[in-house]
Length: 382
Image (cartoon, rainbow, N blue to C red; front, side, top):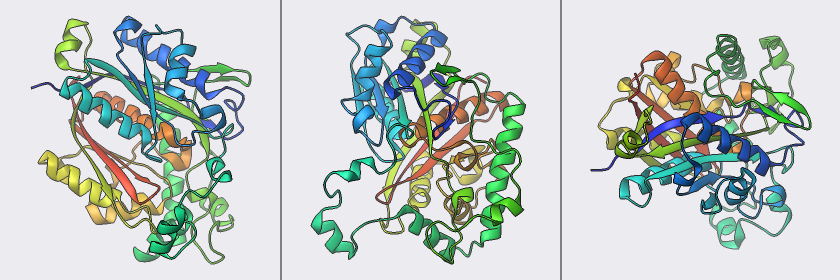
């Protein structure tokens, strides 16, 4: 029976909105990552059978199939195709799931999965400037004209009794963990320094080393006058890219590659699209059942910090040990470049697993429309 393994995983440092990466076209940004992935793996580019990339706002600079254009910009053989997909914030996590499934099915022997998003150049919500995305039947079913993730984050905080102070403490810890990991060199083996018109970026740009609970407490609520969600306990708008090389154990051996982790199990779940952000809870239960594992079997979790209330509610419902959740910080500290975040989280996680000899890791993230992916990988390169 064929398996699917990750043999290499790289990512850019995450750039702040309008920061160092703002003048670099997302196609060029992705091409730098593709070249770095292939060079670090030490393979001939011609053996790549496809590039599957996530990208959420596929308009303007990110239209016309970013994945294929990145292949061409990277100078890879024209024989290498590319496809771009959108499952909202989980797009590049879904890219990995599709890559793994296709490798296991025998459709590919070696494929790249990843994602890119330049939120500086293609702002959040750009696609909604043309037409009406929800359609009359969706609006009628839920008796609303639009769906707000921020309002969903507020609803989660109310439902799970999460005070502003607790949310801000979580946000502060995210920055502290990211700062500690950065200073310890935890990301050194995965980062691809990026040079563009704005200079060279070699470390995640969003970490606020001087933030405090007092500073967070001074920020104005973003979605409700008496709300608890604000810019400081929400993910940062960012630019970034990540990619993973996926193949079978057999093909890896033929090419002299050393797998990091095996794709163990994957699941996707849907939940209430109004609250929108709770689906990681059923997705986690689903993937654990499919894997035949318990929450205590998992040594590290990457739960995307879209808003602090999301991973906090997830922790309460799953019973996951807090110290194992986002040990390197998360999107509150370093940013959330939508279509790239799934691949970024997986890249962070598999390197962390290898560095610390952790057998199982679980990644999950909330997605617009009330969905979530959940993925379990198993360490092979101990």
